[in-house]
Length: 408
Image 1 (cartoon, rainbow, N blue to C red):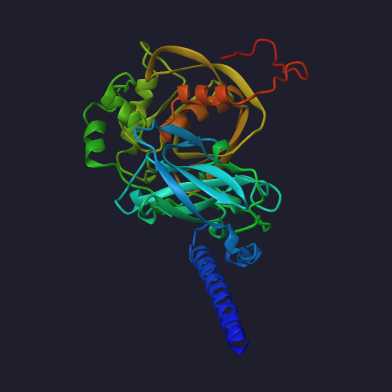
Image 2 (tube, one colour):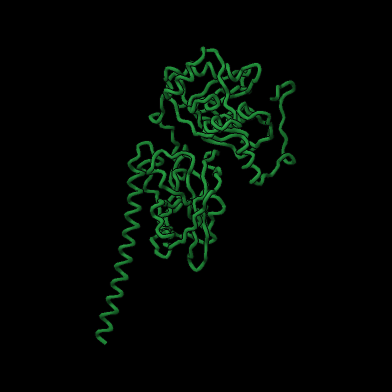
């Protein structure tokens, strides 16, 4: 009998030790997150608001072993982001596992739009939605970090205790992918990070990330006279399409060639043979965040030039209207856009951020041109709207304009 009790207490002790070790592992993971957030000078959350971070208690039953089915030759697709744009992904594999007695299959994704290094390319993306989403956890879902090297012999440990909120939970100014419906688990995942309840940060863009023109871009800008129009890239041409599908970078507001490029871009969009109401720098082969937009909401409808424009808010009210594109020949279709937006951009004289509320057709032009900066073309928006259910409001409200107003 004495021997039995010794074995019993040894087993209990081992179990307790394992539990303590696991709890410490999760606590260490959360402390690393906390340190990372607290050390970012221009990060998503102010230091005094870190106290609002909340977590479920560690629960090892939410740590599962998943079978991985690799997916080959998967097509790329655009995953919508929190700021109304999208990022390019493809499905990397399917994870199959059992949790709380239920069997689930979740897609695992790979970000294919921009890999800057071999280290970054090892990361995979596992977003989740579950029954707690919008209740005790963030309404746009949570993420779990996965690396390719974590997959061993077709197996992957998925620990929902390490599910965390994207930066958009704490602050505006980020582009957080929104989990697809395929990543919904019909169960309460009471593990990982809870909903953030503190003050939301209004983040300004980091001007330190801005770049100068590359040597290739400089040659392109100076290849013609200051008032000479530029070649407009066309989607049917493969090399042109690659540039049009590349996300652009912020430009230093005082770059010496900025005026030369803006002048040539204006000559291009106002070309009598192919006039437009807006143009983005990628359309002339320059992957920098620069656009011209015709302001139909101002007297005399002037063209205006914008440096590093970002749409930081979009209305829930949508409008539908015809759109074409200088880079997409012989197409014009009805696209649904946000009726109004808030735009943030850099003032060329001061280098400071400026914000402006814009609505109507002019807001549509801004959305079209800013999309170009993210490698998004208006046919991508057609695919998005085809997958969404829209509720028409024409029976419930009417819009009016004054007689004689020009309607684009």
